[in-house]
Length: 65
Image 1 (tube, rainbow, N blue to C red):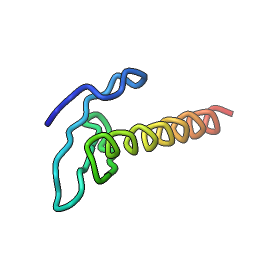
Image 2: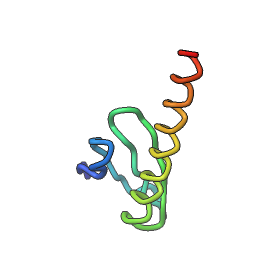
Image 3: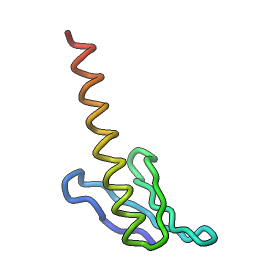
């Protein structure tokens, strides 16, 4: 399943069932997470993306100083 999951980041994600888990992956940057339900996997992916983008901004700022 492919869907637009993240309005804040404007990213598309795919969700696939893998055994007992659902794996959600952002198609723009390959950040992924999992959960027991589709909703939980996308919620976990949203959190992972927040951390990914926070780290990206911190790295960019440290390189510019």
